[in-house]
Image (tube, rainbow, N blue to C red; front, top):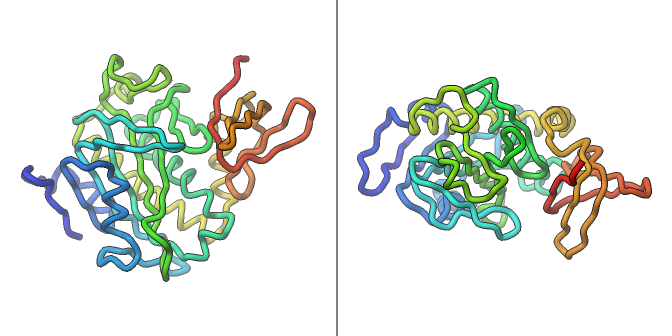
Length: 286
């Protein structure tokens, strides 16, 4: 594996010691527009760094793109993701998958797999953290947004589909610099945290390891094992929610299940059920 130094900054192998034992490769940049943009440029199908799809009995290799500063981070639905230097995790994890996977029901589980991996990495730092997943792509701590996930293709699939999984997380962001009233930061909940670079290394290693393992499980055994785990970790299921759909329609109902394709099933007030594949979800007052 080759570690790429940050421009103008002496690279410390020790600062990514744990991640370097897990990730297939690491690109560590100083300032970027977004780690997803850099990852898509470096790992697009046909590029020298493009990963291969895994063998049937293997977990996919996970490549890491990490930045100290991200100036134009993106979230779902065209939102921005704000990061604070030395306080935020801004990273992308890159995997190669079979092109056929994109047309299977498993494709919808990549974001959830990343969320489960993030929860596992955070619990390794502090097992007492009250963590959960808000469908479809938020990591919550004590019901507030700690981090978000954005999955994108690096380019049109050829003999491999390259998936880029962007993860942004507030680690040491002070309360008065949080981007929204519903956001939170790890330091506000954890009992004792290591220094920023050590914590970032631990989280990157844990997410890369967990993502590779969970995607391998998904490829070998289908969606049911991930659906069971995601159901246990869900902040959304069992709640009355409001879902804003892309066309402007708003649905209100109780979130009752995750489907085998990772969609959200709602029970509407009239007793009928509706499956939502994408939308902006908010909990309704009890």
